[in-house]
Structure formats: C-alpha cells, structure tokens
Image 1 (tube, rainbow, N blue to C red):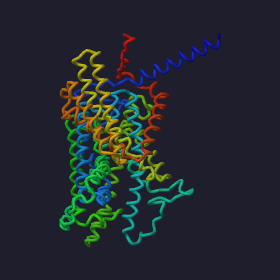
Image 2: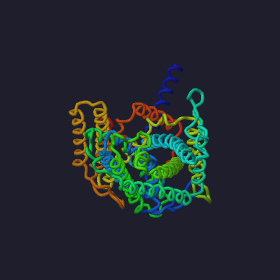
Image 3: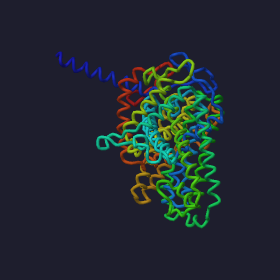
Image 4: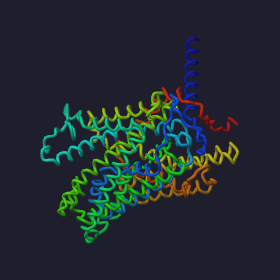
Length: 569
C-alpha cells in the first residue's frame, strides 16, 4: 500500500513539475509603450546612457556588416557566378532589406531597452522561445568572435610582414596558430590579446567604443571607395560578357552564400537603450547601414569582374591580385589595412551586442543577476562584457575555431525568421484590443500555424533545391507558402502597427517572404549545422527547465491560458 502511495506521489509531483514548466514556458513579457520614457535600471540602480546619435548607429551597422569579406567573398563567388555576382549581391541585399523592414518596425514600436530579437520574441511569443533564440544567437556570436579574432591576428601579422625586417620572423603562434597534440589544439597568443584590448575599450563606455568604431569604419569605407575608384579606370567591359556564364542557378547559389555578408544590421536594434532618439533613429540606422553596405558590395563586384576575367580570379586574395596584375601593388597594402579595420569593427560590435543580450537576460532573471549589473560610473555592463571577452579569448587562444565555421549562421537565420514572425504575431496581438478573448486566441493560433507551415515549406524548398530534385517539388513548396500567406492575409484584419513610428509595409506578405527565404537558406547550411540546432535547442531547454523557469522576473510577465478543449467546455 505504501509503495502504491509513493508511486502516486511521484506521478503527482511529476505532473506538478510539468504543469509548472508549461506555465512558465508560455509566459510572455508585457512591455510599456514606446512613448514611455521610464528608465530601465539594473539591480545596482544604474542604467545605460543615451549617447548614440543617428550617424553613430549607421556606422555601428556598417561596422558590424563589412569585414574582410568585402575583399575576399566577392571574388570567391564571382569564380562561379561570373559578373552575375552583382545580381547575387542584389538578391541577397533585397532579402536583407525585407528582414531589415521587420527589424525596423519592432525597433520602433518597442520601448528603448536592450534585447533585440530576444526581447521581441519574449513579447510576441513566450519565454521558452525567447530563451532558445538567445542561445542560438549567442553560440553564433561566441564562435564568430573567436573566429574573427583569429582572422584579425592573421591579417595583422600579414600587415606587419610588409616590413622587410619582420618578414618571416613572426612565429605561427602569433598569427594563424600553432597546432598542438596532433591538431587537437591550436595555440594563438595574438588573438586573445586583441580581444582583451577591444574588451577594455568596450568597458570604458559606449562613447569611447563608438568613437573607435567610427574611426575604424570610416577608414574601412574610405579604403573601399578608393579601391572602387582606382579600379574603375581599369575596367574592360568585355569582361562582363557573358554576364552569367554558368546560368541563373549559379547566381542564385551565390546569393545564398553572400547573404551572410550583410549580417550585422541587427546590431543596431540591440543599441536601443543607448540611442538618443530610438523611435526615430533605429529604423533609419538599420535601413541606412544596410543600403550603404549594398552599394559598397555592388561597387566592388563591378570593379573586380570588370578588371579581370572571372575565370582568372584568385581564390585567396582576388581583389589584391587583380590590382597587382594591373601594376597597382600599392592597393594591396590598402586592402590589408582595410581588412584589419573591417575585422576590428566587426569584432568590436559583435562583443558589444553580446554583452547587451546578456544584460537583457540578467535583468529578466533567465541568467544569474551578475549579468544585469551596470558599472555606476562607466555605465557599461562590466561583468557581461568581461565574460564575453573571456569566452571568445579562450576559444580563440587554444582552438582552431575556423573548423567550426560551417555550423555558424544557424542563430542568425533563426533570429531573422523569428523577428519576421514577431511582426505578424504582434499585429495579431493588436487585435486583442478590438476583439473578444476567445476569438483572439483562435485567431492568434491560426496565424502561428500558418507561420510554421511557411517555415517548413521554405526549408523543404531549400532541401529540394540543394539536392537538385524535380522543380515540381519546389513549386509545390512555393504553392503551400502562397496558400498559407493568402490565409494570413485574407483571414486576419491587419492594421497599422499600434504606437509605432515605423510600420513594415505589406504585412503579412513581407514577413512571410522573409521566413521562406531564411529557411530556404537554412537548408543550404552544412548538415552538422542542423544537428547543432537540434542539440543546442535540447540543451537550452534543459538549462531553462533547471534554472530559468524558477528565477525569471515575473513582475512584467503575462501567463498565457492554455486553449480550451471541447471536454473542458
């Protein structure tokens, strides 16, 4: 009898735990309207300082997006797409513009607090979705920062070796890394030193870090413009024919590769709490930085493919060798300087964004409160910033993180897709103001189901395209997306975004196109990236179940009622 009672107690305890987990996971965040100027304060009573103007935000986005890739990726893709690489960058840029429109609306309608995609999904969906988005993004940021710091070390050494006295005398462990234990470890000293210096700059305050970013970004942009202008006089239009030698599929495949060259404009959304006029400046900063990047990339593509026949482009340093072949070796020096400046700003902004995301989760209680502390005089999240620097330094110092590059971009595509879905979900939430609760619940669920169908169809179309399946399967996937988008459009009453200074046009069609293309790109990633997505999601759910659900700050949370079944009614 006692055993039976013990078993019943265990079942009751298990049911209670799962009930609590479900209730916690479905909580959403209730935020004040964007017009509210209530200061968001940390546990120590201090807040971030609003010091970023519109020009700072644009430079922040450009600094995050354009690294050394502008001098390398353009030529790498051009070897397959030919002069059509220009169209590849246009297509990828157009897709990013649609994603940027979604980011711009949410940045404008939300209060000026840190969090970005994490905060948007916390309000539009629920707590567990927000935590999963954060973890996927953060893994991308951590590995990306370590990888970029290694690349920066290599470029810095290459720049130093331009001096004859240093050529060949700098050891491997200062540049590309020296392999140990049969390649299991790869020692690099310079990368952690560079990370420590940038972390120190970021800890000094947003004004100082913004000044460094502005100088380095301006240097990088000026060098790119000089490269474009110098190369324009060496263009032979005959090199642009044929424009797409390997057909449109090579151009489209190129677009899936260069899409990630634009990643970084979302960093602007994470600077909301330090922006002087966030509701006006954030949308302009997001769109403005992206348009600058598109113009620079297209300019480099036209010059590169016009100077040298695409079949003769170098794989490692296409732009530098193109100028060397024209007797303009001095440009190679400028390209090395531009690459160092580009990688520095990309790394600086990446570390900056990481610390602000940790700050947001620390405030919400999903991470230990130490991450929510802000220094009383420097007004920076000191503990979060140092933690981000340490993680990147350890990874960059002893591991060859370049070998993990094929599992990157999972967090980026996940974040972009969820942000696009948030635009639709929050417009559905707006209807709650005008409809009864039961009808709203049904409407919201219907909308979310349509979004999930669109995401799955996008992934399916990407799989069919990747493995060269019949075009009929791709068309069927596109057809499903069209039907689901039509259901969203005709069954829901979409109004202008409430309380927003900027509204994404074409809702729900524009967000649906974003989700479809993002998931199409997701299907093009290495299969290990898919495994990483599943494994990291499971581990993140376990962390949330053991810590997050019990420590979340419930003062601004709303518990979602589970939908009633027929038996309940």
